[in-house]
Length: 360
Image (cartoon, rainbow, N blue to C red; front, side, top):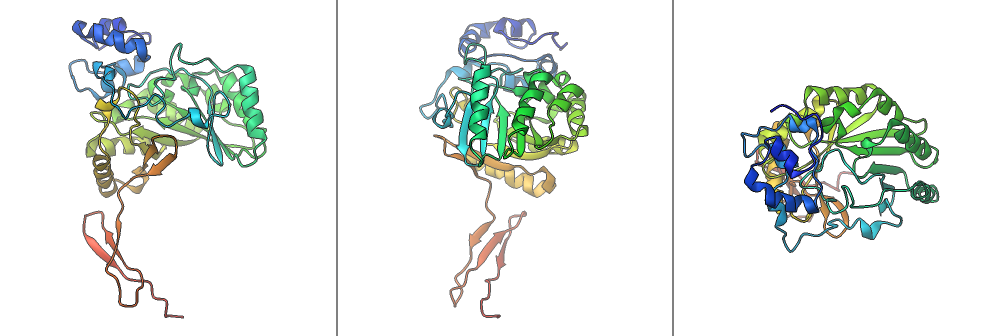
C-alpha cells in the first residue's frame, strides 16, 4: 500500500487506508473509544493488507478481540500506581526511578501494559511544577543512581525539552545514568534528528536509549539510519521486545529480530513476557512456550543476540528472569558434596563434578 501522509487515528482512517474491512467498523469503534489508536506513516507502509496475519498490523491495528477481558487482567498490571510517590514518578527499585514524562506516543501498541494510562484524555500532562517536584525527590535520595525516562514515549518531545531534562538530571550528582525508552527510531525515524541525539547527552551522566521493536521488518532503511544517528553520536543502545503471539513467537523470526538489533549496534536487553493488560489475551502465550523459544535462540544465535527473558510479576513486585535453566542437582556424592547435571544447548545432560574441599 501507499503510506499515508499522516498518522492514522480512527477506525475510519484505517478503512480509508484499506487496513480494515467495513464490517469491522462497529466493533473497532468500541475498541477505539477505550484504547487509543495511532499508526504512523512508517508503520502503515509496512502493513500488507492482503495478509490477515500480518505481524505489523497485529501490533498496531485494533482488533475486536481487545473487547474480551479475562478475570486475571488488570488496568495497572504491574502496579505503577502503588509505587508512585508523585505524579509521573515510579520508585519500585532502590537504585532507580521511572520518570513518565509524557502520556502520549506516536503509535499505540495493541498489547501495551499502560494502555489504560496513555493516549489522548487518559492522563494529565506533567506540569512544570510536577517535574520540579520529581527532580527534587530524586535529588534528596542519594541511592538513586539511574533515572529511566519513559511515558508514553519521551522522544515525542522537542530536542529543547529533552536537553533541558537531560541537563537537569545530570546536575544531580548521584544520578550517573539516564536511560530513555522509545519506539520512535523504528516507528517515526524522521524524529531522530542530530539535534535530538545531541540533546540526549550531558556531562556527568551516561546516556542509554532502549529501542523497542518486535519484528525484524521494523528495521527499515529509515529506522536503521535513525539508529545510526544515535549510535554515531555516542549514545549506547539497548533493545527491548515483547514476546507476542502471531508477531515473533517462532524461532526464525525471533532470531532475525535479535540479529537486527545487533546489526544496528543495539544490544538486546529484555524480552518481556506480555503483561496481564486488559484485552490483550489474544496476544499472550504461555511461559513454557517462551522458554522453548529462548532455548532455540540460545542454541542458534550468537551470544550478542540473547536478551534476558523477563516477567514483570503481577501486582508490582518487579521483574524476574524466567528463561530456561540449564542446571539441575546431580546425584548425591558419598561425602555429601554438591554435584550438578548441566543441560547443553543441544539438550544433552552432562555431569559437573562436585567441588572438592579436601585439596588444601
